Image 1 (spheres, helix red, strand yellow):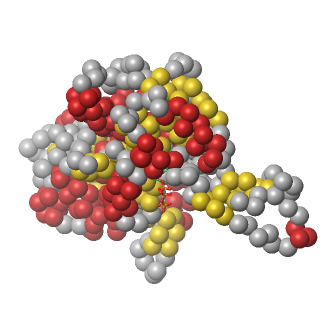
Image 2 (image 1 turned 180 degrees about the vertical axis):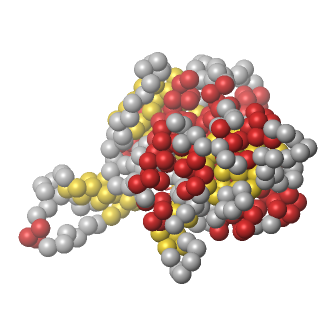
Amino acid sequence: MSYIAGRRVVLGVCGGIAAYKAVELTRLLTGAGAHVSPIMTPGAQRFLGQTTLSALASEPVQTSLWDESSPIPHTRLGQNADVIVVAPATAKIIGKLANGISDDLLSATLLATRAPVVLAPAMHTEMWEHPAVRLNVKRLDDWGFHRVGPDEGRLAGGGDSGVGRMAEPAAIAAAVQSLFADLLSDDLAPSRELAGRRILVTAGGTREPIDPVRFIGNASSGKMGYEVACEAARRGASVVLVSTVDRAVPGELSNIDVVRVDTADQMHRAVAEVFGAVDVAVMAAAVADFKVSNAASEKIKKAGGPPNIVLEPTVDILAELGRTKTTQIVVGFAAETHSLLDNARGKLVQKNADLIVANDVSAPNVGFHYDTNQVTLVDASGDVDLPLMSKQRTAAAIWDRIEILLARRSAATGRST
Ligand code: CTP
């Protein structure tokens, strides 16, 4: 799915060694259907030939404010842009933008636009950490400029390593996709497609006690599960949310019933109680696969030496729902660090789920503590790769997919949607 097809992207390339990555970024943006108009600063032209970028972009590279064929190129580019991406963004362009200085085509275009701007900074760690740069970056962050990176890693010259490396082109392209996905979701009032439906969602990571003060847990924040529950409620469903975490639910969503649990066993019982009465169950929780069978009733003391902790398997709740479902749509998550799609397809079959939401939690800006996610929806009809976007927008895309499965199910069972 591309949210940038047909969008006009002005790509500003500044003078840094990372300028070579602008070639790959251009390829990704045009490949996703965007119209890319490149601008290179004089510094960029020392690192990268204009011809390379012109060959891959939708228009020839522009370099100067003083172009005889177009007397005011910066206003044309700035006013027509749907988004301006600056990659690499050097300390110099960040400084000019933060202080309203326009002395070349790129800086003038950046001032002559109302389009959103995405900056991908790249510079040496000392420059990134300089108080002047910190102040300029903060100012741009506060003004609502979008920023991707910089990452930590190898930098140009002498084997240096640190913060300042430009984000990878795929992450920058994903951020641009995400921007439009979010703008789109802001424009759209949620559908009421789920009115009359009963939905069960689990969220958060379970905690398996070792003794009254210690537990085995995991890093799940519950954000994704909450967004899934909230989106279902916005679409009119009545939702039971079985959660291990206390997060705020927007006040207007009175149709969410939160059931608080801690352990996998408690989650299992709460889920079993309502499953028979729901149309869809989305198991977004990170459930412990093992619990402590010899949990101590009193606090374990250090003086006794390392405790002998014995584990036993918990019930696989999702697999049980897959086994016992009748007309329900059962959705699972697969958070993986490797072999993402193979593992997700395996879970779809082994747990008899109707849909698996797969995410690679080792990828940048994805997973437990982030507000963004990048998932692939895996079901019997194939895979749908979604771009990196907010967890709210990801939840909306998951429900778009589940609504299709519900409509198919209703058609097959003769129930009206
Ligand atoms: N799940 C569950 N009950 C469990 C373990 C997992 O319901 N005891 C559900 C999760 O809520 C999620 C899906 O199964 O929707 C996949 O969980 P995951 O931990 O990725 O898979 P596992 O089956 O535990 O396999 P593994 O840990 O080996 O990847």
